[in-house]
Image (tube, rainbow, N blue to C red):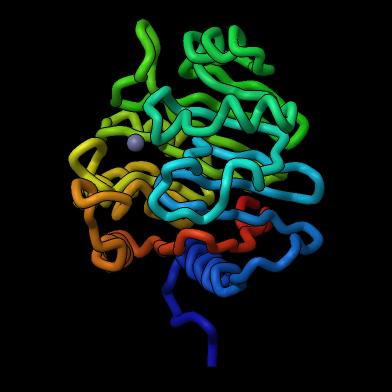
Length: 265
Ligand SMILES: [Zn+2]
């Protein structure tokens, strides 16, 4: 018996096959060390994620002190790069302390980079729309509809190609139509999207965002940290999977998943 019924176009068959591989990859959980060829994605709760492969670590928006999820202390973070989407405390967080202790380079928008440099932090300033190669791959800075938390500054998001795995970290943002353009520019493997509402887009708008971005997998963030951003990630998962057929991986704070560069090929 054929794997696929007759008449199913090849592109659809390949898509289904990709989903099957994704489902297998998503099942590999736990705080296991990085396997050959694999990248670890660690969730620290709220909007704090780290990517790890071998000796290279990159963390997004390291808000650990005061983070209600209490997954890790800032002193436990060892990283090479810190990507900061904006200067609100629940995103800038422990950036200065971690960068000074580890010597990590902070990649962020120009105004925030200037402020951090004055505090003795190694920085690489970028601007929205800019793309730059780093030793792990590249970073593209994306727009985000949100306050920057610093006079004259802008909030942003990032597409990071990390050893071949393409991750879109949206930062704090409302829904915007150019997410469709981003979906065309970058073949996103994993989209990390806020669903909390009130400060950012909520779950309903995030479903529309997924439709425009067309990632291979979605991970919700920025919810249930406080009562104002209370959301059901399971309802979001059901809505995305039912309407768009794109799998959603709900991560628990403190959880590590292995994500595979194979998925971006
Ligand atoms: Zn926030």
